[in-house]
Length: 133
Image 1: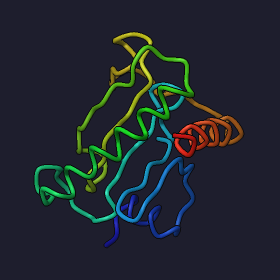
Image 2: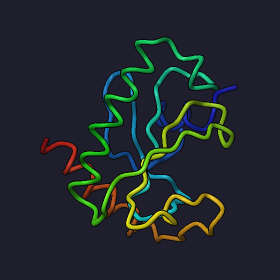
Image 3: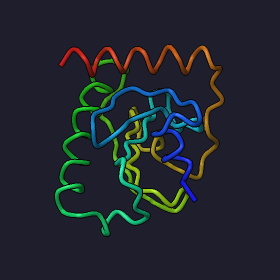
Image 4: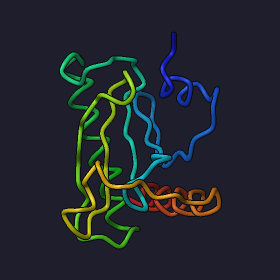
């Protein structure tokens, strides 16, 4: 059965996509820790990051770097934090989180509740930053 992220990749369910190429996709987390919290996902469906082929793992990090640079450029933050937890959805994903403080990457704190309009605006902002490398 396809994962939630595969369904996003296949456009079976909607997402706020900020970047995509042939092998990877990045979209807003719908339960963000901070405005601009993005998930970066390989299009190949693998559960555990260390089971990825070396080339896919390396490519994931290079793609995530490009997305992080777009977040850094467009969202007001000190840094972009990176986390790989891998327990929520059985499909490799990297969290990129705009940081203003260490607490911004605390996964136990309440998630933000943003409107669809806010999510769309944030996605478009990051997308423009990604495209204007």
